[in-house]
Image (cartoon, rainbow, N blue to C red; front, side, top):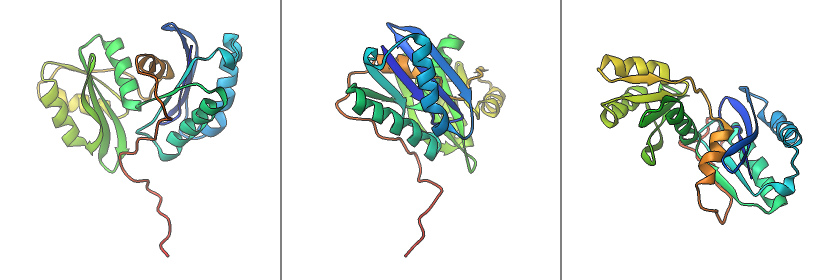
Length: 219
């Protein structure tokens, strides 16, 4: 029994997976308020599934990339559960969770996830079935499109908040790009990826691909 959560991007999502089947799940789109929403969502889902926390075998959470605050909300909450329940906690990147769902929904062999990182940049990951082609990174939009074009000239599924313009750009290059409407991670797929991971011996760290925008004042 895996309890998974995501708060790193534009949604708050929780799922409970049992032997590969969804026991319960919830996903609510939100730009802010993850810290207030997560604990009640977990409590409601556990009650809906008729489970106690003692029945949870492992935990999973997205590590990033994402918003600085959003990443920390999910990680802090699930780290707390890890200590309280004495259960392993697996970290999964937001982009890999979205890519796994994209491969499933598109039935294609390769998927790219592009999420708007602002400043003309995107978070990018490219995944083929069973293989990470490009690990999560941050790139200028045009460079990300070029990287996708080189990796999957025969066709590719795209998801994320920056997927629509990337799909258009790739089609102009003659590449069969298929747009899939997945704007943020679903905790179900965080749980599915975590189920295939070895049990970690420590809590996962946040994945920051660039420094936070906020700076401490100089002395």
